[in-house]
Amino acid sequence: MSYYEKIVEGELKSPSVFREKYKLYPEYTPERLPHRERQLRELAQRFRGLLASPGKEMLRVVLAGSYGTGKTVTAKVFGSAIVSLAKKKGINLKYVHVNCFKSRTLPQVIHAISSGLGIPLPQRGLSVQELLNGLLEDIERKNIYALIALDEFDYFMVSNSMTNPLYTLVRLYDDYSLEKKRINYLFIVRDQGALELGGEASSSYFVRDVITFPPYRSTEIYDILRDRAQEALYPGVISEEGLSYISILEGYDKGGSGSARTALEILVRAGESADVEKRGSITIDDIRKAQVIVKPETALLQDHLESLETHELLIFLSIIKALKRTEEGFVRMGEVEKIYRQICENYREKARKHTQLYTYIMKMKNMGIISARNSGKGYRGKSTLLGINGGPLDEFEKHTEELLARRGK
Image 1: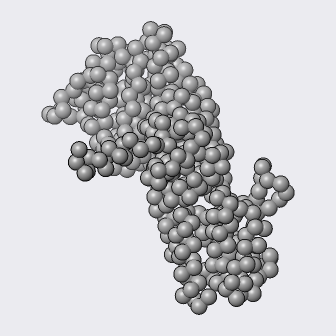
Image 2 (image 1 turned 180 degrees about the vertical axis):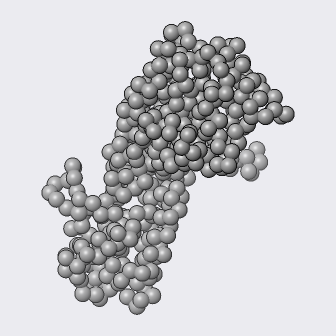
Image 3 (image 1 turned 90 degrees about the horizontal axis):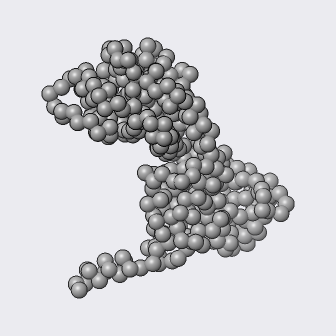
């Protein structure tokens, strides 16, 4: 065995925190969809006619919400469920999911639909109308009903605004006098306003057919992470506090993006960090490192430190030391104050009073440098909990001490 083969084999044989890593990836469809039951019920209501009276009308619904709010996975879960129910009723329904970021033109979208339905169409030489005509004829001949999900459709609308693809798709049966309307749509968008690029004649079709996906709150992200961690990681790899820390970082109600996808990516990267260090568990610092990788803007925090006053830097350093001491995601303000007074003595600075410290902390919170929130369940008494947005702590500690040294402290 060669030297390089030994290196590769050593890594392949080393233990991992992941049991089934792919179950943390965006394309994985989980068995359960926490906090998207309402949207599934709404979809069932909107597409009731697809099973009750197939072909009576073209059904079309918009799923609207920001990045990572569960639109795609909800569409796939619904598609799988309604196809299974249709089969039991003897209805030949097929679900096709098309990513419009990959299929960027209307002919490419039509070919993706035909491929998903198992209908061959010529790749070249036909116009859009000829492609649609061939698709509709084969669907009719094979007695197929189709539910087509067009993902990233707002991107598609912006890229093709001059040709108005929305009008072509939703007014499909205006040009073809067929007895049954066999094609139905799910339009998945981040920005609902992009549909207006199709003009009032097209966008007015969707006014009453929009299902919204709000950003996830921290408790909701926690539930999602807990479910996925149980599927993807070995038992005991990550603590409840670790999952809670990611949830707070990304929870919309805590100032985060509300994106479950980002939260899951942080969990993946944190697990990879633990594997590199040959540890069997994921630490809070692994999560901080992962956040910097997943959200590069957190690396800009070091630049913001330059603008802090001396005592703000001393407080920041105190928070770091308190977090390192406890190895937790957040620490009580009272603990930080104790360390701050010790550090002030070391740097020969007169410690500021509690009220001034609180003012500094709120300023740093507003700058996005630290997190500050009220203690809740699991804590005795009321207190302000402080954390660091990003990491790892060792690098922040070193940078802060260098800044203080440059200022002669």
